[in-house]
Length: 352
Ligand code: PMP
Image (cartoon, protein in one colour):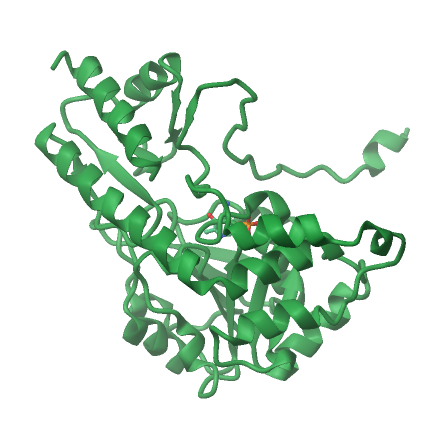
């Protein structure tokens, strides 16, 4: 006999890193920025007129788009804003991937991509990264129903040069290529400069990492007008007001303060270089990172055990018990003081 239970959609969701509400932990597991957002954000929130909250937010997002235009060579109709880049990416998958052929993405990458494919019944095929964990452009030249590449990739932290992204685009003129640039500001070169030559490109970025606003949930896609129009139509068939007005004001303030943003990225890059050096002296091999996290391994130790040990000491990093990467830890770059504590705890684990 059929029951209501049979009619419920069953999905296996994406599982983000934990957000423990314990004081004094060192949280290096979800690639948040260790520094606060720009002081201009505080000011924008303080000056926000709460009487505006009675109204629906503007879906034109003019102020925020104007702020983004200061940094990126795009027009308003080339910008699509959403509630975190996760939502923007989810809508991109729904809008752009409608083919009998499989969508391609690397076997080691952001683990939300297969969740969205399963959610929307999009066929997909994962393409193995090489033994240095690099994405090989030629592997994306065959027939497919679309491509999504995280650049820098996560959790490997490795960035592809712009020429490789362009090679993939050149061989895939008849499908949409999404480049997920959540971590681009920490050392990569954005594909945004390719937008005027490739009408099949969508570049997705976020305020959650380099602009220290994960809590405010703002992400955006940059693409040609036809792609943005298609995204808007799908979004407006789902929820017209994905981005609340307070988030818009805060994100605009952050985007306008390019100096603070660049300083933050500079500090994170310097700490990353120091951490990689200190770990190397302790026998760790770290993949070349262009992100605000590193992916590191040490052949003499068990990564799961080190993860548990650090956790017991209040230092939370990320461990993925998955094929090919179960020997690695992904560690977000913290402040200098947090990095000192991390290294001290790793030394204690190693008995050094
Ligand atoms: N893409 C990648 C590769 C990520 O690691 C993340 C963060 N988990 C996101 C997108 C989504 O970030 P957000 O929704 O906070 O913009």
